[in-house]
Amino acid sequence: MVVGHVALPDPEAVGESLIKVAEATPPVDLTRVVLLWNGLRVTECDLRGEGYILDLEGFGGEIVVRKASKETRKRYTIAHELGHWVLHKCAGINLSGQVGTERIAVERRCDRFAASLLIPKKEVLRHLRMPQRNAVASLMGSGPDVYKVSEHAFYIRMAELASATIHVLRESQSRFRLVKTYSASPLEAANMVDWSLLLPYVQGPAQRLLDLGDGTPTLFTWSNVQRNDNRVRWVLATMPASSLATGIDVFSDYRA
Ligand SMILES: [Zn+2]
Image (cartoon, rainbow, N blue to C red):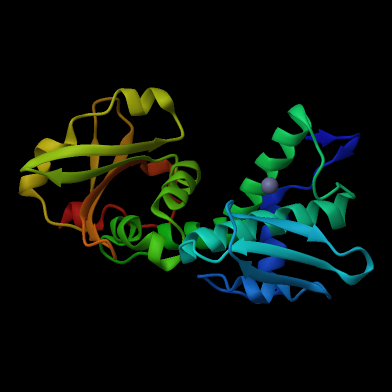
């Protein structure tokens, strides 16, 4: 991606190296990352929007976030604004002022950077390779808490990293309602099986390896979660077993 004739740095690679230098582990402590730059600071204010970043010229920069927002939202905003800071420092891209397609490209890059910083690819893959029973299903339920991100941010990232299709359902008046589907492949999402029929019979977290008829082993996971809002939701996910690294014994509980 090129903005103003400048190639933008790869957000995954930059996120990964910053995590390494800051010696941060999930949930990534963004203060450690911010401290990598002299004069860069974060302040909280009463804002209408979620936040912005200011260039303090020779004195560093200031990321301003909305005080009243949820912790997960603040973390996302800080990570996104850090993306603008990195583009500014590494590629000379102004902190603001882009228009049209350049603006879209920069914003998208900052979103990707935020995802790579908050939900590091290496960490997710390490989790997916854990040999423990039902490890993938557990991650599907606990991931937003493990990484201190919103469910929305986590499932988008999982859909991307594990080629997963994820359905979040809630129960209301004894019926299961599909809240949202996340998928790297819109076609897969459209062809979803009505897994909600299974819900009264399953306890999570659990996972099974299935052959859905096309000869490709698919890992099916489910978990029920209850967060601060006290509402129970079910997270059902399918992902090709091939998207999990070799070495994971996804077959272990299938055989049991
Ligand atoms: Zn932005």
